Amino acid sequence: MRKFLFLVGSARSGGNTEELARRAAAHLPSDVAQQWLHLRDLPLPDFQDVRHVPGTVYSQPTGNERVLLDATLEATDLVVASPLYWYSVSAATKLYLDYWSGWFRVPGADFKARMRGKTMWAISVISEEDPARADPLLGTLKISADYMGMHWGGGLLGYANRPGDILADEKALGEAKRFFVLGG
Image 1 (tube, rainbow, N blue to C red):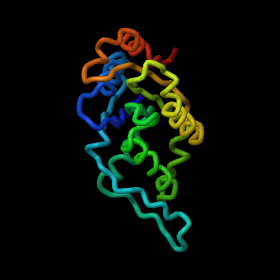
Image 2 (cartoon, rainbow, N blue to C red):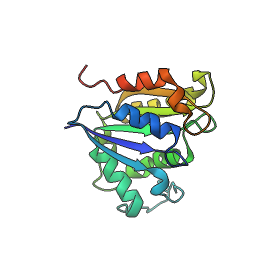
Image 3 (tube, rainbow, N blue to C red):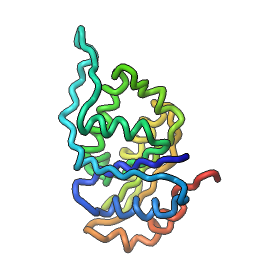
Image 4 (tube, one colour):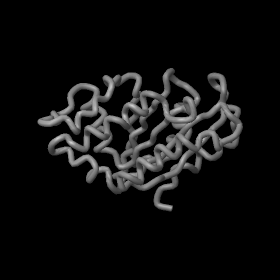
């Protein structure tokens, strides 16, 4: 069974990016499980890269880190829903991705091997009319997926500036209906 994990990286609740993601998710088949996690509700401390510190042994994650690791490994599809912040993913999204470096080394997690074959998707709303401004965001996620041996599902972009503006982007709302093409 497919299980989609929606990781919402917005700094505010109910923003345009989340709305666009929910519009796309509404068109998933009913037998596809969905889990929604808001990264702002699961704060992580700054990532500490200790992989080159002699004698370092990575311990089992606890708390919010455990929740995120388990949800990531249980999903067949990861949907990163992050607004475009300074031409890349949000800080919460970037921090989540930084933690992947530590999860490579958690005993028994087999993180990279278990991520192989999953599909990564991106959904973002930008306030620039030029969609090429989102290339760094999409590139970050696509290259990360490639590195992990994941499939790239693609990116869905919408245009909005103020809360609720996404509802006026008919093109993005139309694309949302067809974004998750399963078995096609």
